[in-house]
Length: 407
Image (cartoon, rainbow, N blue to C red):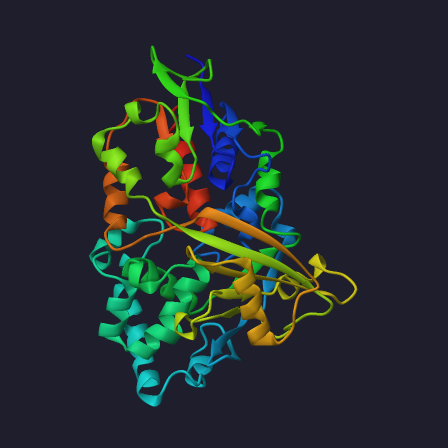
């Protein structure tokens, strides 16, 4: 039987899967309910180190976009008692000068380097099965025990909330340790014109039906039927918390898989893109806002610092974001005024109920078990919820799904 693959979801993971299949000579059709492709990709403003985002950078090279990778000077800020203090990211000197840490806290920082060096071989983002011993407790519990409450408040906690918009008290220590391992000598970059150019380039030459919600899926006589059309294989590339809402999918899943998807949780995220008459801060790419500051915002990212081509005439462009059920654009703008004392010239608000997949303690064990279970022939899944809350997680799982489909 000639392979004909249906991919439900036109986000980064689904498009990556379709692109990888196309390169292997396998026909696919991508179904995307929204008009715009790429899912949440345009919310990603920068890329982390190539040794962590290795599949992302390989894909960028394959797509001919390497010449558009622009480095980001790794200078950031952090709010402490309402004021912004700036430092070089992952710089020991920067942390030693930070006012939020006392001498005793700073004396503990070398212990973190020791822990990372000791357990480095177990901290591979692409192979969580190697580090499940660290998936038993929260970041908050781990850091308070091994370091201190202040280090949690002003180092570990902000790293989690700034990247993922959820708290250290609900996040697996394994994910934090992987991040910390790569942040000690981080290299940051972006794509000129926006990271969403990856999705745009991926979609070129693919058969994509956007604005096409799927009413139902079914399995009949060894093939998958989607709205009356037959396919040899089916890839579900939707956010994990939406999978069980796809009519017909539960009948294809084991009780264990149904439980897995019921346990899939996401953080709601609100972002406000702010245009101003001039840059509000020309000294750093982002400012993190620790939870102890009691603000709705978790981070402010300066688009104009990251990629100067996104603005003209000396104007400013930034994005202020926060996560949780109580976050509103009004609260985010109020926080911006508190920190910088300036209001926006214009704003544009974006909201994602399925904004960022959560990885509480035990979730990586569930992921490893999920990957081991057998399913009906030709049924596959991909998405960042299956590896980690980065575009690297989306791209990697999309590639893996494509590799598993046999020619």
